[in-house]
Length: 147
Image (cartoon, rainbow, N blue to C red; front, side):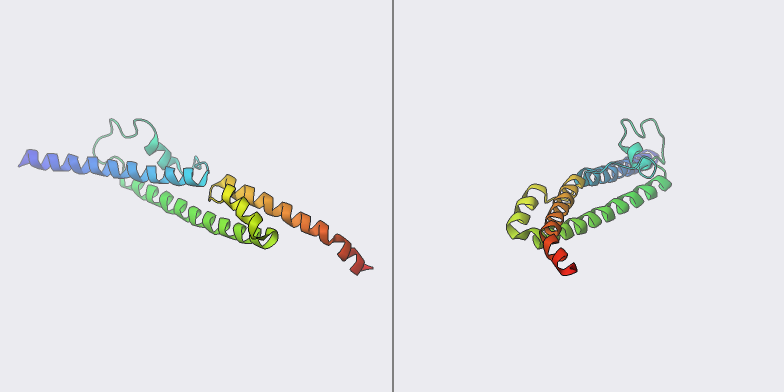
């Protein structure tokens, strides 16, 4: 009975460590999906769990409960960041359709339609170019109305 109890305890510990490692990998997948870098301060718990050998040689109770709570907070924060990026990308795509027409928007979105930071930045830049071109095209009309 004692050995069975010890075995169950250590299997539980192993399962806990594996769950924490998987959660850290989920957060890293969000970083990759968004093309953003982790915050060395706020994401320290995730970085620690992802580092080679994290938890090796640590006894029972590693990672500590507080670390598991922090890990969940970071996962939720990055999930929220992904939702924000998705909303931003959708708004940018709508604005591109408005200012550039469906054909141009389709071209830009086919090249930069994701939620990665660089895709959103490319859409933002193209939108600025379209807005600047529109302002330039409207300049003679504005000048005429001012005089």
